Length: 334
Figure 1: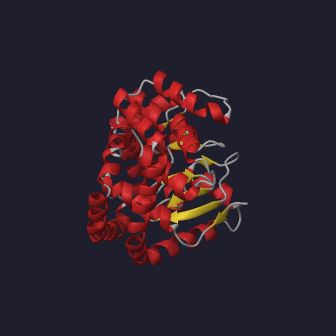
Figure 2: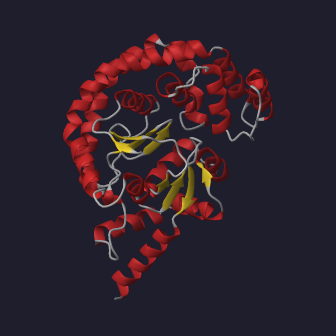
Figure 3: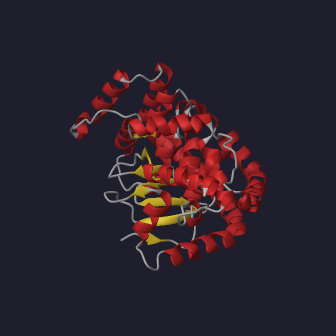
């Protein structure tokens, strides 16, 4: 049964802060009414910067191999390592790393015995189209997985007390978010609410708990048995009735008039796909795709679906597109 947790998951919040600060991902809010939250996040980033500087200095070798992720895609290595160390119940770190990387890079299904897993990973890297430098770095991490897991654990544990202190500044926002969700699910189950608001289907997923997320406040992520739902994902992001208020309608129209987002919707109408594959098709960086997808999902124009795999697939929410076109006609011509 899916359950809603009252408080953020401190380890994931720490990693969310770490990846966003390290890669200089912008602190944004989807609506003007959330501007106070954005300012509070910016204040927290400023307060946490000395702690991050300490970590960067202490773990120079680790970060030498983290850099490629900023170019090659959606926080691959750090996200996988965080999952292995803190969220994944599997004991074989090397095998889990290889399996996750192959999945993230869209490897063909490989049914191999455990003793042949290393051979399968080597074969995948050899046949993959990624740059040879990245192949070597992934192989180096794979062969030294204990070192990298230990580094990730030390990074998170060093930052966690300071992040936990900053999280206390957001208790009112988290409480409001949790209470809003509980109000919404009085008449429907939590799974249905998640699908309604985030457009993600959890039918075959292994998710058991939903955590409110602060440092990734306008995004969502699935890791192992957890769904981390940003506190800006609430019912105000979905269509509420036949006629939108004018400001919300104009906000949705603004998203549709962005050339990149419009092109992404056209591409997704052809075929549902996941982030890294979409980035290649659109000739955009995965970080840019992630930015656009947050906006499209928040506005309800894109559906997400996952199964037992951690990979999230995007597709166009045709009903939402048709509704807004109808709404525009009603607002202008009625």
